[in-house]
Image 1: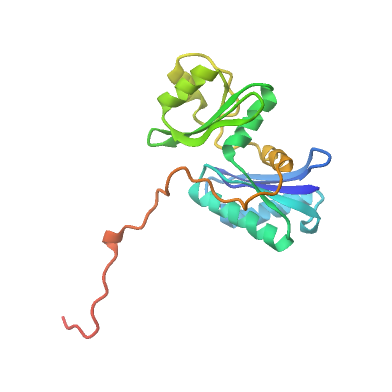
Image 2: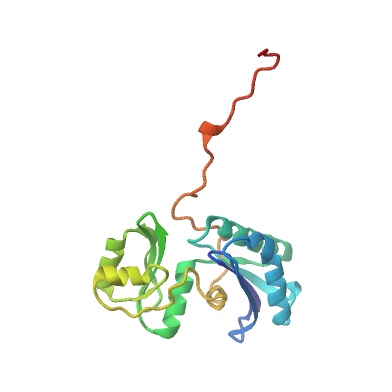
Length: 229
């Protein structure tokens, strides 16, 4: 089965084609955008298909990063994955950024527990802890830096994600460090999705609400018809 994986969770707009039977990546396209995923995603997918020698008709599943991550980016990626899956009549499979980061860390440090953690601002950490067998034992959840550091001291895991170095510094001891990016390499989303069965339709994983909210106080009321100045 050929699988298309897409990731818009952070600064990257990425896609790759993966041969699940051969456990081999066939082609990819990655842009470091920061913003503007909606304008570029379909072109990135087309390039990944072309470099992978594949087409939409030959796909057996769509994998997508579900977060935590950029509020807008996650909506773009998940909407595209669900739309393509519906049109092609194939499954859409969600993979969180934290489990993908943990999988990438385990590729370097096999057989180790991994604490994947993202700096979410406002003194918050988005974290998930995986044991030596890659079983999720905590999270994904919002925690504090001190709580994440205590978890790290207790379990001595490999640290991964944008909060990895902060956690190590707060714990006051050395840890093995995996990827320190906000999202994993796109291949790990594909590999994880290939091992999952068809489940619920993917949806964005928001561990806190959107930063941008309507400000009702600035909504102007309409003047009544016929009112004179």
